[in-house]
Image (cartoon, rainbow over all chains, first blue to last red; front, side, top):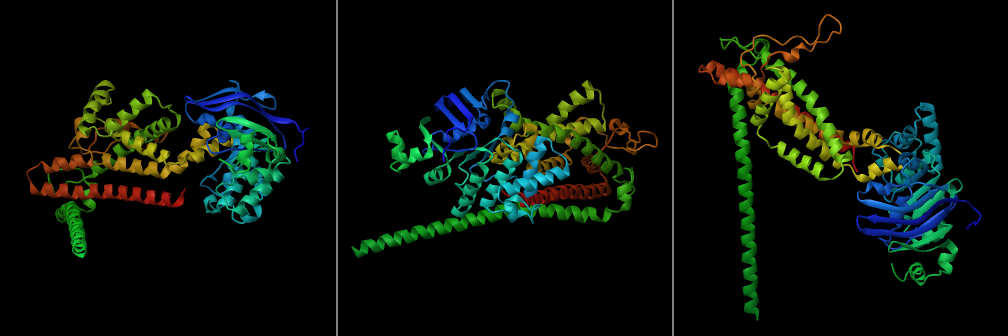
Length: 256
Length: 310
């Protein structure tokens, strides 16, 4: 599955992150490729979600966070003082662990991102909302009730709505922070199928606790432990012939 | 040994019986305390209605105060109350909401915001007469607003400002962080997040706080007396609407005024019983105004709670 020749989309160099005095990420160096799915695995508290949040600078919403090193998006450091965080987040979208739709109508959930982009034409918004809902494979389920409150949907539908909301902004990278951990197996399967579709157009980085999910869906896998990335390789290699003993122990379920 | 065991069981039974008795006792005490408050309030209201209700009528609402109790009315008082409330709301609401947003969303958690926070919580408990003194010095003498509607409104605005700030902060804090994150992750700015999400979702709570603040202000007497509201006003403030461009006039802001509680205070301090009846009638009107506002606040809270569930 892993294509070696695909171009690098996001690359980190000597990335460190501190919460006050706690050293949460230690010297992360990783090159994630465009139009591929990169999975980040590891036990709870290993820093994988924190790492994901450095990629769109969401970590900055937590007070007393300090980042060192570089994160390159298309070869450009996003931690430069001149970087516009707001436009960075339009390029790097994020899907969260618990579905977090706005308590508004299904239509408004998607339309908000478009208005943020500065699109105000009613027709254009309607078209893009429909397209995004189709891309997120939720359109047939909601097309007849676009103006119902998004919280009336099932959790699985809410999560796909959240994906549609991200897609509407037309990002280049989609970050997913354990997007299926609150969902049942069928809803999970739908999201995984959707990821394979989205991969054609986006770079996807997914944090997951579910090893099968990483094995099923991703092209590349990074294993995190205690703030360090111990191993990063094509998914097949991580699961069949890991180089590090600790990775082997984790993927075979011997700890974590 | 069976006898020992029996003894034990008896002891446990005794204990349970004692606990049950305590439970009953507390139930009775609780009920009595509730009843005392309720009965007292109820008696008060009934008494007010018996005294004042026959006095209520068209004439009572459309007459100025008078030397003759049967001719006196509350026209200048209720108009004054409404105008003062407009000024109060116009100052306390935008200032309070803006301060609440700043403290919750923008202000970094440092010693300065802590200090503001502690002050804010204490300000809500400052006796209203102290606000009256502050307003007398600031608005009447220093800013030379005089004993006007503007001064009265600003004074009460100052009084309920902490309440509005606290209500705003609490409603904003009730919004889960995941909603803010969702908005930021889409590339929304802080202001877009606040304007499109934080404020609309906390609107019900904020409005409830505002109305409860206003319904407290409407009954305040002490600070209004301090800043010099008159007790006998036989004319209305200048009209809001004029025949000339721009058709709106703000001259009324600088006019002298009286409000409902002061009118009541004035009547109650007179020797004639007929004036006391007038005071009771005005009390009914004031009570209904407050009840109506509180009822509206409860309705809003109920409606917004039902609409948004996390």
